Length: 326
Image (tube, rainbow, N blue to C red; front, side, top):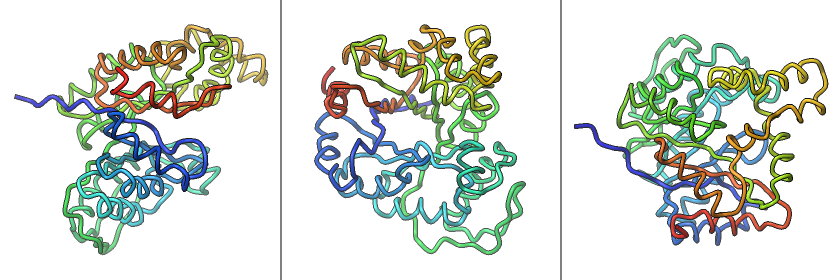
């Protein structure tokens, strides 16, 4: 009989402000009932430093990257980074990797954004070998490694999760890693996505990055949500993802106007219903109920990212969304 994945409760970190001032917030997370903290990596803090601090500040929490790009670090350096955090937090670190995007990988990091699916697959296979202590000499499809052996002992296995959008990557995540990380989808979309994952692996964990704007001002949420969504749904991989999810009719007019160069005017063409589906907003109770729908549909670890809202203390929202508040 297959085991059902344990239900966990994550939160996206770091919080607003300088890292050195966040210790008390991290310490409080355990009392609030959170089990996991998940970092990300784009153009702000890197994905590992926050977790290194958390390993000392809150030693009861599981730490995870959700996600770091598979190809902005070399394979050996990525293995070293994972092994370092595994040493700081034995048995409590999860490495989440993903393809990222052409902007982050190519434009910002001067690395070819080529064959992203294969790069992720190769990276997972390399990391499995390297983190087990093997000496790796291998020609993968997207890179080759010669004679690398990790110099840091990894005494507890490091779970590897893969960020996934459409079916091929979802199946890769479930088949070759320990879990999937999903992003920018609705609670109802989760049913379809988790069905694909569970078809490959009934025991795979599913982490969901969920963007939360805690404001009772609906118009402010819709306006801000449209700007935020436009930054994602016009990236080719996310456009293809939402077309695959069936939003071509809802977003087609926005995409046409965006492609024609009318970026500002195109924002109003994002239907309010789409904002309501993809952005969690409203009162704390409304946000909690919306997040619960993700869990009801198959997410095993929600990882809300609290967005700034005028007049709202973001950490008060973290408290209001906590398991202990339910």
